[in-house]
Length: 300
Image (cartoon, rainbow, N blue to C red; front, side, top):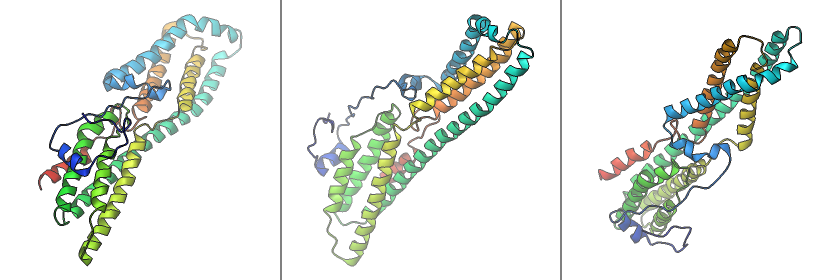
């Protein structure tokens, strides 16, 4: 097992990385950061999506039903002797629901847009990597062969090791060693003919595009909604359900109607949580673009 970049900064020669592609595999030793923010409750992402959705719904419905039993009699005292209390409570709930519904809708769109942007960056990185591989395939030996081996090794690393780390919320860092090896080999090539100069300039341009897209992908691994948004959403859900406790109706009827509202709020929270981080959860980005490129590389 090779040491982690966090343990040493000594560069690894390109030949060593090339031999790693056909020799012993190694796993990065990164560990997920600790955080108390709602978007960083990593263990929830380990639960199957259907079971997690049921857990969210059960938590919201259970909270509402528990409030109906223990808190409703206390809160009802504030509107018990008010004329037309149900109409007033209904009006307040309608106004509150409009603002809270807009908030949930905008946050859901923001979360989905983050996933879409991260997916576009992954596609850009894979496309630039494919173009770079095609360019260096025309380099004279031994540069062309070495660069193809290095790019093939990097693609294999991303699929087999980097993606599982990303799905755990960990930024993979071992890929930097492989990228540095590609850059070292690429810059060591000295074009002679005008055709080689044009080819080398195009390869460098694709390499820069590849670096840019790769950095954006790594930045997206831990991206998510700020903790403040989660606190506002949770507080809004609690207040929404608390207003429902003020209605004067049969206890069973209130359990059923409020339970339906609580179940839908739980579903919305699950949807936003599932889309919160682009590489985690059921709505996540796969490594399919790199898998397609890797299959093409192995055909050479």
